[in-house]
Length: 290
Image (cartoon, rainbow, N blue to C red; front, side, top):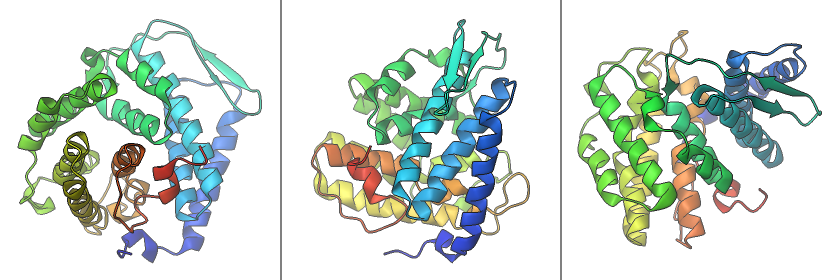
């Protein structure tokens, strides 16, 4: 198994982080009044708890909180995109209803993509149907032109993937990425860190292409290189997020949602997946306990 930077973080620390975030979720669920910011915070926090649970080998908790994150992200995107009342319900029979809001800023395109990955991992076809209803004109993109173009093309392909995959849209993304570029090739600011990992997706795109072309050998080769790309980016100590923490402490690097989703697609198509890496939890690939 590859050495993973998050494995150098004491599991007791991760347990502590997990408890803090679970407490935050409980307080949100019991909050008397909610607004749209609460939904976004709940979705992000539930996803963090799911990822920490995967690191701590608590498969049931991981799946439970992935489902909660998915539920909250669907409510959040629906509220931001459509002129209708949205209801969010919790396991303890508490529910909140939200009136439509006039959203001048638009929806972050990266949030659509996050829900897209969750829907694939959880094998929830209702998520895909919902995502197709959100017009791309509703999205806002990061200010960096190159990153914005890549994100637009990737989401355009993802829309097609939910209906009939269009390889030309995938290849349009691939032309923008460059496997020979390193992280130091890009201007790094705390604001663009969430998007820089998109440029590490060169081999990730090839893995998707290999699945669509039914090329098992190319898929596993691209998967191996994708894992190296993921580790190279998310193991960085010198790149700081907003708030001052290095990206190696970011839960987004502990488990790769994009690669887990890609492997789930491959598994469902009976591809033999050759990997031994905790960035991609085996139980999420197989989906046996969902």
